[in-house]
Image (cartoon, rainbow, N blue to C red; front, side, top):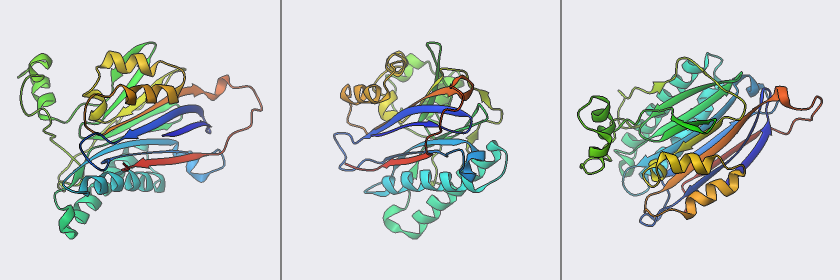
Length: 277
């Protein structure tokens, strides 16, 4: 569990992250990280960044892949002075190459890969970078919207009209992922080119399939709407009935325009939760 409530240069963001190993594996292959720079940090011009990754590959390889993804995306994103979509694209491509090359150089990690979903907030706008089937949601005025498209075989067939969502529940192959970082140099990240304007009270959610395979969108929305982030994420973990790793992050957005004048800023925060039993 990691908690943060930070007044950044433009917004106040309060939230929590939780990652939990399932009942089958001995290690958690999920990784999650966030960076919220302080006002005086040079990185503040890049805004805030939130990431979740779900690794795959035998032994500890999935754990290695997800850890590399969140670390490299974070480092590369904050090293660049480019438009947010360009920075996200370069960060994802750098992570993809690094994971692939690590797998090629280390036989025990060969074939490893990871999903990765990132949210960047800058000047009241939200951008996304995405590969795989981890998800980003926006909860606004009680309505939950999935911001990412699952890059899975079933999701693709549903989008193409070859299968209904109801039919997919009984069909095999539901866990086939069409793209994952590190599985090849031809991976093409999905990047939000046009920022999404954030509104007062918006709640952002990042999660791996260990969550959305367990509960439906209505349950996610109901729990995410609760005001206490720690209680919110803990309630999801205690409701778990599946063996898979589960990771989720919940962040609430508020405009600094509504804060009292002269309110002192808190220190910037960064955090990381990854692969632990």
